[in-house]
Length: 318
Image (tube, rainbow, N blue to C red):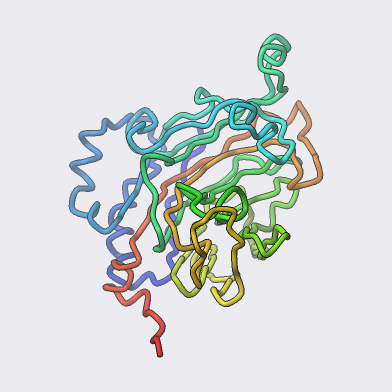
């Protein structure tokens, strides 16, 4: 069993926020094979829980269903076959487990009988906080790696609107904190989707690793404020999208604001897709599968807390 290499790089490591986070993370991803129960987790973290509006360190022996729900199937029951991207996997909750203080999502090739039953060659998992946690503004971060960088693999850590007050996608926005292409292990990407008149638009950028790749743990983060979206990897900001450059065109009677659509509560998604439009419909070789997406933690801070710690200073209004 692989072990999580404990390593922490934060946007401002000397700050109170991240000093406390580092203390909490010392016990993360032990890789010792021991299952810690939730009571122990609560006892170990009760002094630091207050710095987060949401967090999961994935201690224990099972996914915490008070924090996470699942979106299962091929998207058809959500009126979104192929999840809108011609993806090749069928999502099942069985493909997620908690082990060695990590969430592990497995993408795999199924046997012929299962393929016939599900109508898909691959299975994987998609986990969401919809209906359980959502937030406007703040810092959202996760520490993630892949066990294999294979053609056609598409892991993602992203946000979607809880209520979609401005209408259907992308009128109410989408924020992709991290998307990876398995065939390009030396880079990561981020994007923000929105509606401009009759056009679906997005603002994106790529991060290029040096001396490492997506099979190592990295902290993927978003700083989301009324003024900007800033995306970083291991504390290095590589993509900034300013409010003056985005817009939305509602299909509802809710009037847009100067910062819409990114002015409403968004929930968190973690998923591990196979194939699809993101990388030209490529798929991995059967003999190279399965592959795993390891998540050390997911943490969210409020904008108010970051402001108290000096991590965010609002722009002065005229």
